[in-house]
Length: 324
Image: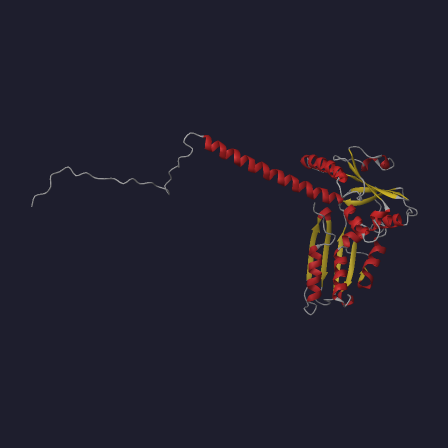
């Protein structure tokens, strides 16, 4: 199994190149899109090469997800806690984006190791922003409390117009993913993959992993969720998170893995589909070769203008010898 990286590799490499070449006044204007329709725009002006403007557009939230000033709740506090004085939030953001950050490269830590760690965190802005509500809920789980004034069933966006749900209790948090796929083949692969995923929980060495369940129908925890949000053609996957799963450094990994679970499944479904197609093509090629060998005279080589064969001809002279 392959886990997705929390930081944008393109963004991190671009920031590293900019930091290493601050003496060069260059103009940068980059647009790119990453999985789940998260769009980025990075702008550097020649007038002030130390200032980087980074704008982020999040997936379109469904009706059951509530954004505050265009961002998930807790996102502003998470950005300030993660980036400190080196990053400033611009209000309002650039048109067409949910968030615009002003990064001052002159305020980066002088220590090389600390500077690199902060750049990686900036490149992980997707995790910081989209994972902010989940992080708040799981932090309260560590202290065995519930987020004040929060709904018992909380919907969080993770794909365009799609959400997953958190059901909070003092001693555990249940995370439920309605699994939706547009292609019927992807749906069949995903259903089989998820059932095997649940069975893998019983493998030796995974006893401490969060309990995982799969159901073709919505679990009872979602009885208060809106009906239009519970359409799923590949079933529902539930994880039960206990305090031991989010203690210390486990929190960041748990937040990222849960936030990108659907993308993780989609990636492996596509890999499985590609592997299956490769096996099918190889099987067809082997059958065609077997049929060719079974044809009468199939072993004889076909003559072509480029590959001619010649026979040596011997001339027999039957006339009497010439008498001189």
